[in-house]
Image 1 (tube, rainbow, N blue to C red):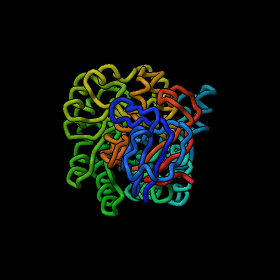
Image 2 (image 1 turned 120 degrees about the horizontal axis):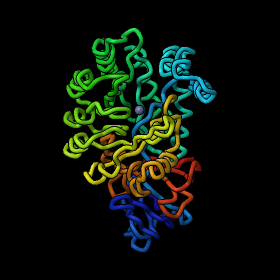
Image 3 (image 1 turned 45 degrees about the vertical axis):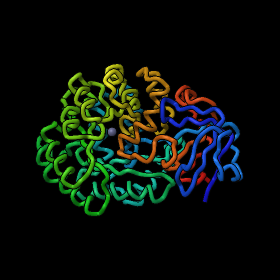
Image 4 (image 1 turned 180 degrees about the horizontal axis):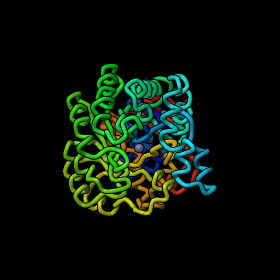
Length: 399
Ligand SMILES: [Zn+2]
């Protein structure tokens, strides 16, 4: 079955924006068969009845390459406590922080977790996403991590969106393993990875490399296991300090290193050499009122591809709009509107190892976002509002 989309402004993202002012796109069997100027539609496609898009902007479907949308409860109460003057210690004593999310997630059934995660997935989809990466990491037991991964996988079966599932049992050291991070990796993180992989639930493996979580040498055995299982690796690195996590991850061939506020020149050089994508997460920077800016100019100069993501999570980034993420990246980090859009299209695709999407070209998946806009710079320029008109997912127009 073939469809001809016509009367649109196309940003193919193949070279810069790849703008074609009066364009058409032919879709066949869920794939882009042809894209170019409306005046040059080749036969026999020129005889198809056109679907008129009213001169709207069309971009690749957006890709959220870093999210934690599976969790129970929320942390709005803690947010309010802190703004009323409570210290972090008082919040922790009142049962707040990541462990409150862990408790709620452990107590929730798969059905409850799925219902809450779908609400968040729908919000990300409503900001133009056709692909979302979803991590575990609030279970912190073998059974609860596998439960989270099952829920993450199920999101892609319930919604018109591709879900890439990431194992993140190495997210935090639970209280019963306090001071024994290495034991936690051996007794929970690695067994949960093996169990989830056996169920086909894992596409990639991630870890949180930080003073409050895991050191590079503690994470290495987990990453070696991931590679033995044929899985991609990625790392939360250099968010609050420079532990050289990105250097370790890049040397092991990581697809991405994420956050990176404290990334140093050695990390940038290692990432450039390995082709590791820098995933920039302005939502957490904004929420934590961080002062240390990620080294955008140095990453740009080194030619490291930069992706952007919501990092949607209950503690440090309760954000579900990719367009707001783009705005924050431009305003807070001085990324250009072109870099912001590349960050949620082709570079995000690369961060997930997906070669079939992120640009609009013959042979790529027909995942498209259609906007109430005329130029791509409008997407990151607007604050908060989502200009999405509709999406096409695998050739299917949203109902
Ligand atoms: Zn994260």
